[in-house]
Image 1 (cartoon, rainbow, N blue to C red):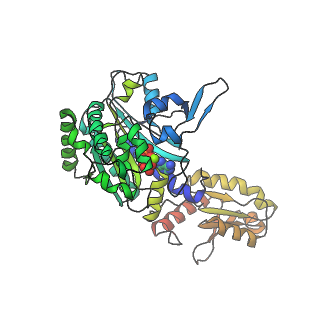
Image 2 (spheres, helix red, strand yellow):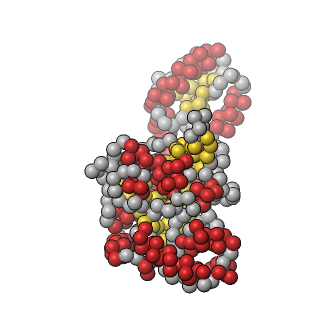
Image 3 (tube, rainbow, N blue to C red):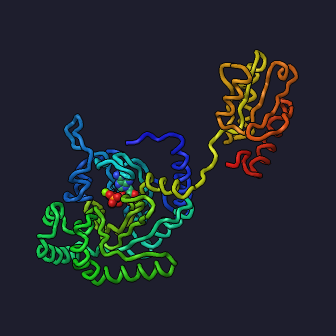
Length: 424
Ligand code: ATP
Ligand code: MG
């Protein structure tokens, strides 16, 4: 579980702002749901025999004896909320949420115990067009963030019934290869054999490569859905690869599943994953409602932004106000306020607790400010300030206090238009 400091957060804020804009562009509405839910909600939706429920959930019993869990993912809580508030009654919904998720995993690069997701879900749309629109949305997000090192894998999981038939075929095949299965796979053979296809162990590669494929066992409706989905993807010019081994680690998925993967982050290569879950709403007590969603790991996407050298907006203050002497200090707080009125969003730092001008200019420099305004007793008596460029050699200018808002707006505008003084 990580602390996030300003250096990291400038990427997060950039990403979050881009996501917000994107969801407006596609007509998605934000929802916020609790971090804690009944444990049972996750057991029923994600599935008993999944990594998440078997070994990764943080649970506790509250004072009333209820079993609660920190949410390991957002979909289950969102579906619960949508049912509870009647959002799915004869309505279509495009919803999104974001925030921390919790999984007790082995921490490593790109894998944390508190991590953060952006999550987006659409309810009430049965056709493959929404599957493609959701992928378009995610593809646009990469473009907005300046990320290009991601590839799209897609697959279809069919319906629960066709999956059950396939599962029987798969188990039969794997039984025939028992001696080649590792301990984990032998265990999964009983509980969740499809997950064996997801195994990343080299020793399992050949067994997996020769296994029967789920997309060869789809029911006719799922087959048609998948073909139309691929056709629409191609019509939109979205590059993709069909990966018959993409099965996803949660039980509730059906039909279309997809994952954006990157080559830039080593083993933790999934940056955004999702799929259809047409049965989940009903399973959790709602009316039958087709649904699809995806979740994106913010930490991994931030790493991608850093790897791609994405530039984030400048968060440094524009102006540092250096004040020395009784009269200057008395006027300083008021001048700073007027500058903030005139220059919202640019950052005006007023020097606190005195110090020599030399010390104050040092602080100004460390703050990253573009300009220092210097007001000593002499300037205060004349009602002026000296403007000093901190990032470039230039003669100091004098300016009356009344003129300051206008002069600084013009000066900062000109500096920004020519690229900031220090080239950032
Ligand atoms: P993985 O195969 O890497 O374990 P997953 O299939 O468990 O991923 P999902 O449950 O689909 O992941 O979550 C969606 C996204 O959230 C992933 O694509 C990934 O970017 C991110 N994610 C999942 N688990 C973690 C974690 N422990 N730390 C950081 N990011 C994570
Ligand atoms: Mg996982």
